[in-house]
Length: 402
Image (cartoon, rainbow, N blue to C red; front, side, top):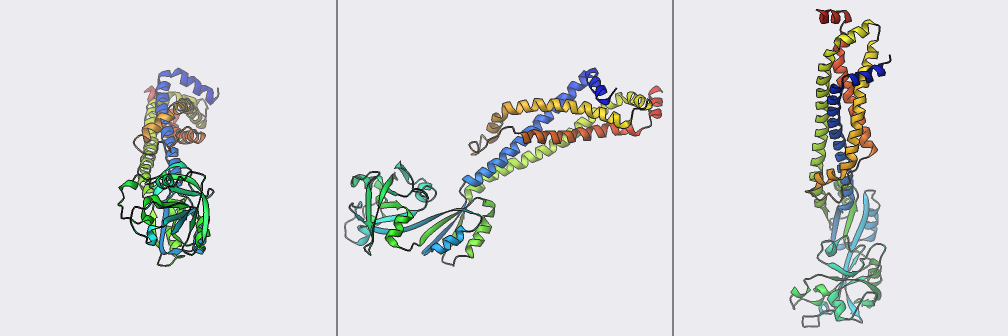
């Protein structure tokens, strides 16, 4: 009779023991599989946080940051994107600014122009102090002009209309309105504020229109984004070597650190849980097998006396435990498929990660379970059967008969 035939017969003959061992393996398998899924979800969420938190360095300069410097920064490998900001004032052509203050000084006759690569990523729109009521934002692929709703209403302007601006040097340029925004603080302003500083007269334009008006562009602020927040300090050092002391650089990674802290705690706790589960499993399964192995000492000694090799007996016990373990893996896999969503909700219910986390069973989770579980089985079976295989069969039979 082969070792695997003896193994299956023994499992059937010792059904109560087999069921108890199967339950233990099932609990262990569910715990390991859950830990593997949590770790995968936490790691995937961490990558998603890196991409979506907008970790960046913000450069400010009163004298302006040149296009050559920005091109050098853009060439750094860890830089994912750049958002430039440039501001100036211009005279409106064909429409009038909102004026509440008396006087004809220049600042009371102009509007403020703010050029962005992307108005949605930075500035007052990103801080939600301005809200786009209609239309679309200015992006790297979408040019246009964003005007305040009160300015648009007072001049009967709407999306699609073309408006023009003129600089002090007489240069003019025009563009189409692509969005209308609102602040909510327009009517809370004092009347003695010059037109250039009023919210209604803040106009957002694309950089191409800004260049047509002012020629060679110098950005007053540049947001430098990185896809790897862990390298933010290294990126700052690289940028500092490219600019002079007039440029002030500040890091904006508070949101990333705030979101990553609880996530790191989840990873640490789950890793510790996984390690303790494996250690506890080896101890518990070893104790159970040791107790049951004592009851089959005589049987083992008889087999050895009949010429069955110790390797054959070891393979029999491994087959018994591995068979029950594989059955537990199948049950744990079914549980993982059914309750993966509940695991996400329970794990991230009190955090901001629910929308980012995507806990679901994958092949690599089952492979992790098979690898760790097999290690537990080999360790436990080895510990339990080693004393018997090492003993002399004649001594064992003598003790049993005596």
